Image 1: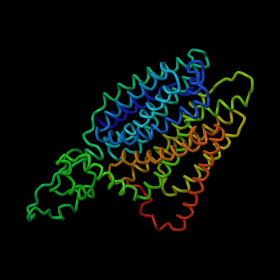
Image 2: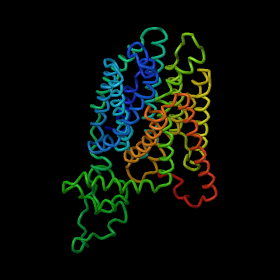
Image 3: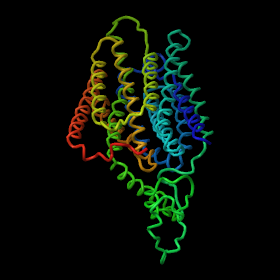
Image 4: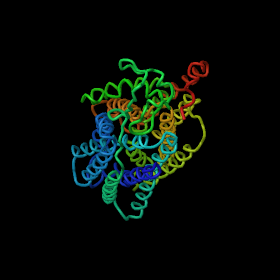
Length: 471
């Protein structure tokens, strides 16, 4: 299957699985007549379970993604989505809704397979485009989903329960698409590409002449599988090309993974963008998880005692549309984003801090909506840039490993933040105080990145070799 068709098929999966219009009104559904939960139960007891379950699921899902070679995990991802919306439709009570969050954590953890599958199957020269395509597919799906949700609700075609039925049907359709995808022959850790070495006529007592590895065109190197990852991989994999023959695949895979992680994060470009990814994703997840609760509180302040028109779907659609446009744009802009990465990240985080503080303390729902749109657009744009920069900077195909570790770091930070600020076992802060904390969080991160940018300007010679990602 050529890379264009493969990309189209996987992007169709990303698009369909995001057609979940009920998500724009989840808090209103849970606190409405269908589930009869309080805003405190939703915010401080139920929603934190998604963060914890996502963290717990991520490591085993990541390892299974590589061990099973991506496709089965995409299928499991679809099944988890079906289970999530089935419970939302037919289960009742706080405990049942906590289990919904556990299944939803499995569903979101499975996204590592979606975003890393193509990096194994598609040539490296297309990475910048497929990073944009895969991200844009999910964003366009969300846009149409939220826009449809707003129209269906505003024109009284569907209520919140009916929107959940719509979402349930959509994820059932999405479940079928991964069944059509080809099963990759290789993965990054447990099923690495292996090479066989022709016997060197100058070889004495089984020792291979090092001159045979001076160029990637050596006749003594024959590829088994797909194309070579380069001379360095041949040299390094020579000593490990038979590591799985003894039945120790798992043990050797873990040893290899640890070794590769140390190598990956020695690259300054990968390290800097990974740090931003982990920190920014932590804040983004918290905002996504609790913003509907904030809107509900602000709506009451904005027009006390009056019935409110709800535009959650329209706002989500607007933020997603702007994000899709910027994501597609950066995929074709010939800019070296890593040249002044720390300065760029510091300014983005400063903007995010301002958006969140204003959002937390405004009494106008429209100002809150606008700040959210700006926050989300900046995040999805820069995280797409980060994905492309990391993928282009990796010497070897360790994309799923790197992205999985970045996400794990993000979820560790988010879990700590949730336990301290949100969870009933911690401070159990109200939603306004939560968003004030999130604004301060981005403000501190902005200062750290700007300090790093100033330091780097004074000592540019220390990392000049790593400024330009490998093509």
